[in-house]
Structure formats: structure tokens, C-alpha cells
Image 1 (tube, rainbow, N blue to C red):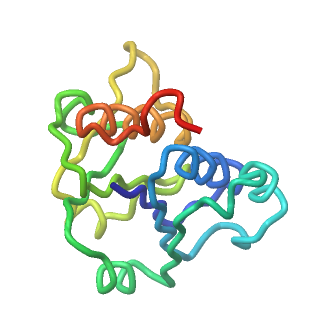
Image 2: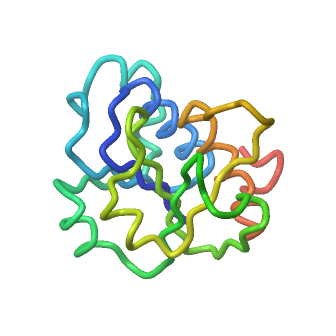
Length: 154
């Protein structure tokens, strides 16, 4: 399983997601352009010292990502997804995509997604922070696929 950050624009959120993925053993793909320099100090602060444990792949564009990606479905997370994330049946090689915080995923990304899911929210709520939403979906995907590390493992 991998988390794909498509054109992220807030370094603290990207760093938080990278740290979560390092802790959970999930690889991260960053599809540029980013709204910040990828080695930004705010990104490093959120990532802390987990960078060495992170499986990070950078792609200069969506075209470069598409050419380099392996097998697995593209599961896009958007506030207006057509099904709740917990109702989607995940596979171990799924790639969970999140777009930029300000604009979401570009239309060309949505057009090739195998599924578009959303985290259910109470009426009137517009959206969750992208790092929170991605962590919720990633947690469910790992639960479904048995992808969590054994509890209590060092």
C-alpha cells in the first residue's frame, strides 16, 4: 500500500503524513509540483527524525508518476467521493491519493482514479484537514488488509 500526495501545498500536512506513513510502514509518493520546497524546514519539523524509515518516491509530474507506478488501484480521497471510505474494499497494493489542500486533485487525476472515496462527516461540515482524512482512510485500508505491524512490535 502507498499514499500518493498529488501536488501538496502545505508542508506541515505533507510532513505529518510522511511521519505517519514511516510509522505505519506505508510508502509515500510525492507528485510535484509542490506548493513548497520539498526539504522545507516546516516539512522537516513535522517529519521529525522519521525520514530514514520512510519509503519516499518523488515524481516531477503526474505523467512521471503514471510511468513509474507499479500495479495497484488508484483510490482517490475527496470530500465529494461517491462512496464512504469504510464501504470500499481495499487491496494491499492500493494507492491512496490525496490532492492539494486548497484545490483537491486535478481533474485529470480524478478521471483515471479507480475509485473516489470520502470520509463521512456530519451535515454541514465541508472537509477534514487532508492529513487527518488521509490517516483515517489509511487506517481503514490497513485494517482491512491486515497491513498493520504486530501490536507491541519494537
